[in-house]
Length: 350
Image (cartoon, rainbow, N blue to C red):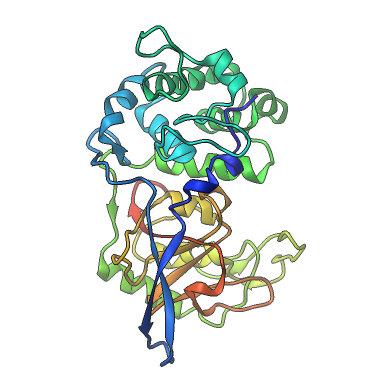
């Protein structure tokens, strides 16, 4: 049994990462009407964060736990563990999913029964206690690493896939299984875990202007499912969820466009929108600026669309099959999830 599935790791009563606050502004982009701009409210709370030993932020009160447990076995690092806990619960020790996953590590009860540890030696194995749950998550990752050690391919990806879909499934498919949910889960956590040790640097305003100019030059290019690369428009692949193929269309899909534009300043984003979110730093209310990426979905791994913010509540994006790269308001979809800023790292286009 898995610890959780990425679709169920969010407590609907605690979805403070939704974009809620709205501000009316007057915009250019050929328009004079007031439009609605949504601002990001983050769920991580006001805890101070530290990142010197990790390449992503971790609440200060959990830093030593993550750094210690993250050395349980050679296959697990503090970065990998921190990325996993960020994905699972955003370090919320009271998180509870609709299917019953519990605590900061989002263990299902049966998984906790089999793998839960008394990490602080107080005589109890408490899934709600981070001092127990964080070491247990690391130990469980190590156990999984042993289960899939002979499976070909990227070891870290196989471990994460097994954490999400089960070791037997990874062995069955000889690697990451062909499940979109699991593939997004692996990609998102890997992007976080593999940031350079300095934590990466967010992009500059000058770079953002170059990004927007690059995207603007592509306005009018056709949408192509799977289309677009760091080099520019390209033929895509088959097929979209509704069966639309990009095999005979030279252009961009949403993440292909953002990948292309940000490559102009030497930032090589992953290929999918969900992985691009994981490779970016969320932007707080009032801090959104031109060039930031606008993401749509209900959770980090269910992100299905991305655009490039150009100011005044508008973005440039490749919306869907049958359309072209164009300007759209940020509130064009109801599930606006986050605004985030790409980070310099050693990652290359995948």
